[in-house]
View 1: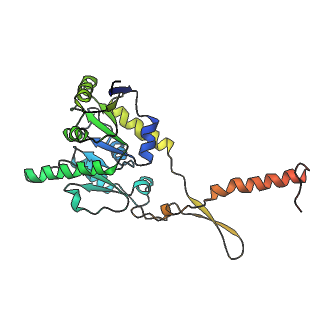
View 2: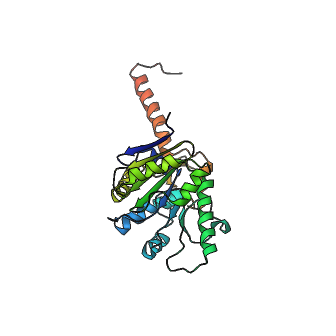
Length: 277
């Protein structure tokens, strides 16, 4: 049986979107697409609830916008915490309980560091990917070689995960097949037929549409026996959520029970159900 397989897909799969919602996917941004989406679209895409983002791109405008774009009342901030721009060795950083680290593999644009610091930064950032335990890695390659050297090194060390690539390289299929053949052991990958710019827009649109935020409302009975409803959607701190440790009975969980009791009463009054005495 052939243990090496490249799958050609039409776009982002439902499984990719599900992994994104459960934060079981990491993003590796090698280069911006030639037909780059608008800055707002790119920021929204990078700000989705990835487990982490590894970026070869360190454009000042983009990084500055990401740094400033996360707000406490923002839907995405409630899903993945605040954006943390990491431009140095992450092993020295204590991250909040929940956040979105964006690792700048090349440091900030215009920064001056030694060759050793550059190697150390990249190694420790890639190590965070290895230790994350993500189920999937999405590589956005633009027109560059679609497999980063560090990812190849991870593969050679036995690291395995679902791998999806979107690339503008004309011979991307041939390049990826050759890479898979050189890989040791079982290896497979998916290559999107969609161009990177369309892929980015599609993932963003479909995720927001499919996983629209639902407000969390609970019922509380006051001292006079009256039922009050409270919206607790924004009560949690994005970086240190408490409600995730509890099973919250929401208003929508109680509605079916109330409707069933109402229906049972109507049926009983019509003589279709025995009335308990």
